[in-house]
Length: 82
Figure 1: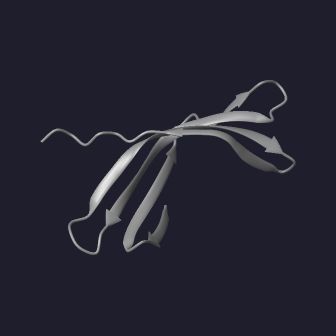
Figure 2: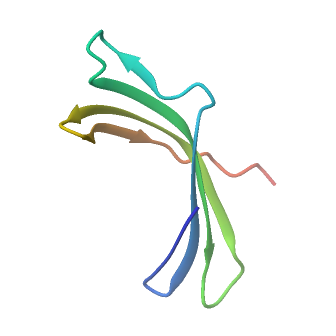
């Protein structure tokens, strides 16, 4: 979990990988794709805390000893109807 504060809003950010992720793409082992869930809880100075969450996926390539994100997608899951 990563915690950060910005613009007066504290939030806890959580990113979870799918249990079978990442997946190797190709035969050289220099590309992979990964997916999972993300969420964070915002704690505004005034008002009640609220949570946002959704899903993400990425395609990464190896450059030397580092993995670089080449494409990242994410969405915001709508809150349940009241």
